[in-house]
Length: 220
Image (tube, rainbow, N blue to C red; front, top):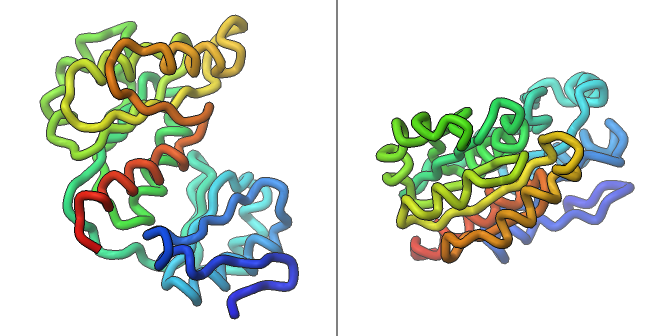
């Protein structure tokens, strides 16, 4: 059993769904996070946590010194990822302020064994920046696009590439952006056919969706 005194873990998720259980760290103590990291790593070979505040991360690292923490994305990894599989994902962010969310997606994908190309700060305010990188993006098997403000970038990318595009609205912008709601609604109303949209700031969810798309094209 890989259960801890405070958590009922799901080590069978890797076999059942093709990806292991990941720890959502907000609301958990450092001790609970450390216990779950160690237990999941013992069950699956590696473990991953999201939304870990930096002050709590210090205590987790003290308890599990071999874990690696990224303060920008607030993710923590224990153990080595699996070998990279076929296909790769482009993770595109509209602005520098979107990097924490785009980075959460990229870190999750690397934990799951996927090659990632990061493309930063190519939003519609300077669309020439996207045009300069679009051929690279077109080579990806899946594209994740994180954007705040009015959330226009995923629609633009969706009209320029053939791969599945997953849009991530971010809570970036002034008052009328309503903490990402304006971007979310803009993406849901996109005229780029087939655009997939996840919840506000949910880089993790976008990465899991990309992982499932890649899995579906690879025999298990």
